[in-house]
Image (cartoon, rainbow, N blue to C red):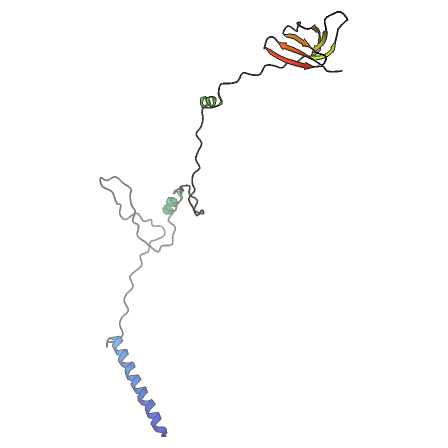
Length: 200
């Protein structure tokens, strides 16, 4: 094995690679010298005190419609107070939809409002009020031998002595007397009530 033959093979490979690299470099550059850089367009600037007005206004059909401002885009960092005012005056109104629910809300049916006439028709004719209670108290007997049986009745601080068929306090009639109760009729209200005997 010869040492010089190995170095010669490496040298031929390096020369071939260098030739290919030069050809590729010339092909990419187009054979001419370095190209000049394209000039950058100038950036429009506005002074901080200058206010820009809309460049054009669009109108619809017959001259009626909203003005459409087409202000030029600039890199001016100064604040535009007219734009801020327009954004402050904007009212954000939703349509009542909850965006956090997966499904749309189904409105609940509202029960129809019933009038007084409909309520009265459903409940039927009005019932008459109940008669007032009889406020008499039966607390004893006042009989003598050979006389009709009489009883003691009281209403508040008034005390009455009555037999069967008597009218007490101008509108209470004693109908029947028994050993433990008395049956009283309110002749003004056509109301009958049994009053038990109370002791003490």
